[in-house]
Amino acid sequence: MNQYVCRYCRQPSDPNSPTCPLCGAPVDIRSVVSDSGWIEQPPVRDMAKIQFGQSHCQIEGTTVPVADFTLAQQEMVYFSHHVLLWTDPATRLGTMSMRGGWKRVMAGMPLIMLEAHGPGHLALSDNHAGEVIALPLQHGQQMWVREHRFLCATGNIRYDWDQTHIWYVTGTGDDQETHYPMGQYGDIFTAADRPGLLLLHSPGNTFIRDLQPGQSLLVQPSSLLYRDVSVRVHLHLEYPRNLGFAFWHPRWSYRNIWVRLTGPGRVAVQSVYTPPEDTEIIQNSSYATHHRW
Amino acid sequence: MTCGAPLDVRDKVSDSGWREAPRLRDMTEFRFSASTCQVEGELVPVAEISLSPQDGVYFEHHVLLWKDETVPLSSLKTQGGMKRTIGGMPHIVTVANGPGRVAFSRDAPGELVVLPLHPGMELDVREHAFLLASHSIQYSFVRIKGLANVLHGGSGMFMDRFVTAQYPGLLLLHGNGNVLERTLRPGEKILVEPGGFLYKDSTVQMNAVQMPLKTGFMGHHNMYLAEMSGPGRVGIQSMYVHHHSSE
Image (cartoon, rainbow over the protein chains, first blue to last red):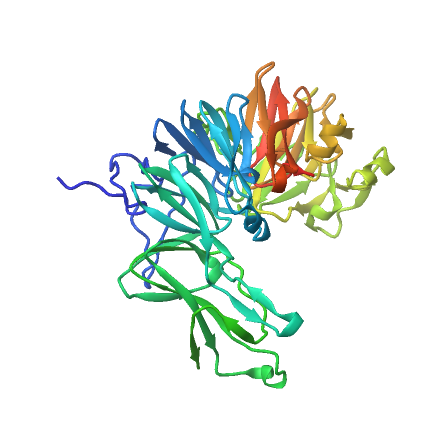
């Protein structure tokens, strides 16, 4: 018998449920795929439930969705303290400190995560119009997530972080500045010893794609939401042919800054992003490919 | 008086007891007094009011989107002008009188919360969340009591208070993101991110409570949440300015 696999979270799921019990994606809709191959992640339906362990999470609202947790005894989720919307007094809150505190502070990352232990209720929400993305992780599965997109994870998912190694330097002497178009650090989540649930908040809409081995594409650095750790990333600098008025100013350099994603693996982008704005000449960078039109 | 909520959808209540504010359908129209309100758009909704000659609405002047040229504007006399200015509240509340059309919106994705108030109701609203109120509703403001509430409560120094005496009225709020409401039983408590608080019945007590947690570098940040104690309704919004931490 063929087992139904959710096309969004890629986990064996229940085809008779209106929404996938593991990721909340609607089951009874057809896949929306653009001509170029991007699969639109359907928003989790209002009041859909996502099961994990003995606990569950209910997604409320569609503009800035709230993840409302009903935590069972001995189950735990962790999250950055600024996404806590409400909690009932019975839920036990504690802190989960992390290594590399000074670096995290310097990079603008949360220094301390909060833990919420069941039994009890609590709810989390981010501060952007967008979607909650649920990623159930199987035993041993790893996922790279862009910084500040993490909403929460179950206690059995290990949290780590590493440099993105995507950077470039503009200016000279005292005016030298290092830019991190994809953020200085990225979050890495691993389902260490058993499956777990990872929730992200994606501003705008979300699109996913499976890259074949060696297949590559260019995306805005800040639009990358998550990727399998098997997907390789590096800078790509593209210089348009028409220089325009930049010709008159030796410090201006019109170029597009991309990251090139190379398969195999799954990647997801969000439709809200911040393009790099500066136009100063790039003096140095992490490994990058170039193209001059 | 109606609120424009769709009647052909089921009530959306989460397992934890929060009820979603009914999302008004685009171009929904409903009546109050002898006037009508039409809601336009769903992402950043606009409330378009068609005022009858005997009706009026009041609002903070910066939420006015457009109006008929013939609609007269005046200012509502508010007490405690200096206090309001210090508290960051609008010094002048503007009144538009009928007949004519006038439209309002706030500049954030969210929902319009339509609250028809029956005679004898009192509702407290976080500052800068109210979009408009009909002229039959009395407007005042209350100082948030307790230094901890003011410093750490995240709702500012004052809340708007809307009171109906003999006549019903219509109050429209703009909630950022999604809006959820819960009715607390007497003595029931819930801890809410202060920035997420949107409105409450005046019977609900609000106090800032310090959580036994430290956040931030070297543990220098205390974490405060707003403890809401029933009985009464509490409304929250899912998008907010974060107010948890303070030095």
